[in-house]
Length: 198
Image (cartoon, rainbow, N blue to C red; front, side):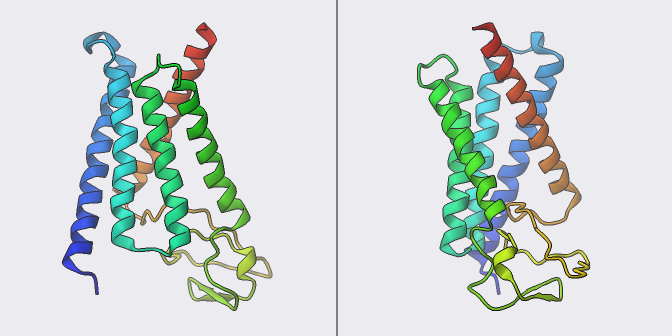
């Protein structure tokens, strides 16, 4: 049974995620109408969005209490967002490129760990996924503790599940994931434009 503290942490993480989504909305408005905003608004709001989602994820993680390996992986992802936020907040610092490169390295590490299946879902033996027992857990890359809610037809194949950082199936969270992807793509394009001008 979840404690009141765990439910409070989950509620706080959802609140922070919605605040983050509001700031992403401001970013997207800025992209359409930059003249209506004060100078450097984009940098500040982009940094706030990235830092807030990192904090929201860490609060969510605290409520979930996953195994230590998943904590290490999640911390690396949160730090990547914080380095990216620093790059957005201080774009003219000599260390801005370093912040960006560290963020890239940590994001790549996160995806690499998913691909190689670390951390594994279980220590040897069988793993049950959506009511189906898989006898080769070392070939299953699962980095979330949520149960699979889709019917999985194995037919002799072991599926690869991609980590969704614990997001549950919910229309609001799908939108959050979509908008974060759009924000990341826009930030990447802005970075490329900035680099092309140098």
